[in-house]
Amino acid sequence: MIKAKKIFKNFRVIIALIAILLALVAINPNPFAKGVAIRSVSFNSSASLAGIQSPKPTANPMSRERILSMNNVPINNLQDYYDFVSDLNINRTVNIKTTEGLYKLLTKEKIDIIQLNQTETKKIKEQVFNGTLNKTVNITKFITVQKTRETHTGEMEDLGLIVYDAPTTNIRKGLDLQGGTRVLLQPAEEVSTDEMDMLLANMKYRLNVYGLSDVVVRQAGDLSGNQYILVEIAGAKEEEVNDLLAQQGKFEATIGNNTVFRGGTDITYVCRSADCSGIDPYVGCGQTSDKNWACRFRFSISLSPAAAQRQADLTNELSVISDQGSEEYLSEKLFLYLDDKKVDELNIGSDLKGKAATEIAISGSGAGTTRQEAIFNSLENMKRLQTVLITGSLPVKLNVVKTDAISPSFGKEFINNSLFIGLLAVLVVSAIVFIRYKSLKVALPMLFTMLTELILLLGMAALIGWNIDLAAIAGIIIAIGTGVDHQIVIADEILKGEAQVYDWKQRIKKAFFIIMAAYFTTAVAMIPLLFAGAGLIKGFAITTIMGITFGVLIARPAYAAIVEILMKE
Image (cartoon, rainbow, N blue to C red; front, top):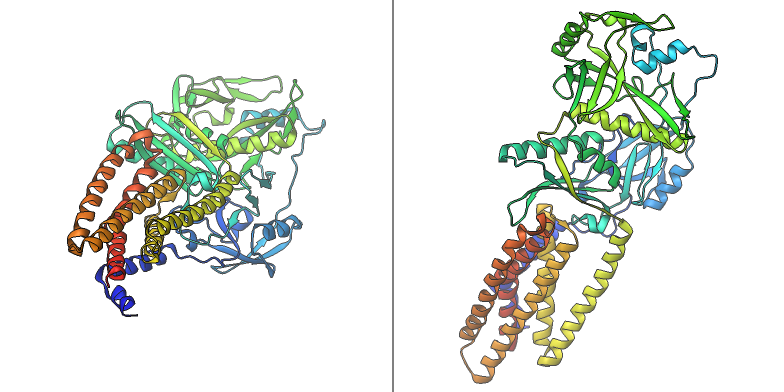
């Protein structure tokens, strides 16, 4: 009892206990958390219209909005959510209770695309296809498709919600553990610090506009001085990330050899709502000569007054021509280019001659082996083009160096195996130490110190928002393993001092001289790894440095104090 009081009154032990408490506050463990957390909310969906917002990528996991019940049916996990939404019918009211409040949603009707029948006039079809219909016919309704998609990540998108099992701590899991896509990009040319900041901000904005959340975009480099950008997106598919980031997004519309407008500053508004964007209702979908399917999308944009005036100036000198259906067009077409590749060409209605029109319709297409596949491809193409038009082009072209698509099932299995092997390793090490020293006074404090270092590491990761991935786990193992080695050095010196009746403090000082030499050697060795591998092993270096620092400054001094008090007679 007297020794216990001495231990808890010891200054170094008090510091360790305070550090553990602060780490637990940062981790905020809650193993009994129920519900499903909202990862993202689709634009213009039922959930979005009801007021549910996507969480910020920087938000702590435990602060994210969680769905607790739907129509008074408790939602405790993903399976409960799947079971509920699978029974939903169209035009049904859904009352959702979350940790932030109550929302009322209305399920939308799923409408298939209607093909034109043979009685539709060729004139209207050609006008829509050529982009001139909105100048002669008032379109009041666009048919859109609301899709339900179950992704490979085990998440489900319905009502515009992408959800996942409620987190139980503030520890962020990296892509290796939760699944998603990692893309390593390299600028085609060297960029300055200001240009790199602008590039990172533009990419984050583009990904957010596209609707992707849990996005990490950061600068990286290697020992050769090459510049890289590392993008990690939880729950995203490899194809959509590559298509969005691999292109610079330089959009340009020309008449002849003259530019009319560019994506970004020349475009003041891009419609993404159902009343002015979606699958073109007058063209729809149809089969091609090779028996595949193609669909045409259409959405409206607004031009700046300067761009509209350029269009008026360029069309003022053009002549008017007529086709076989007596429809009149201008002698030049409007060509649309994306990253210097022509994506479409539109006839210009004669009523636009010399007119500074600010409302323009943009169209394009998608293809697939089935009608449904073509619909989805067309809508995804439209979504990407809308994102590019809103965000403008990136300051420099980016080349994809490496892409990793990671399955969450692998991550879940790895976590379970890691926890099992970690617990087994701790027990084995403790047993070996007990056999070596034949004393619980040495083995138990060593076990306590190992757990202390682990908690401190995870607490710091939760506090700074650092993702725990495979590289970080390797760093944790290294840090704790180094800690065990240092504690053995301390135990040997203390026990040797006891046997030879040497001064305790001198023995501990000698042990810590050895420990500090090893600490600085390890820390210096980790510094190059911060920049090696284009930043992909940065987590290993950071975790190792933080782990051994916490051990040397907090955990191991406390261990030395505890063992010294327990071993003194």
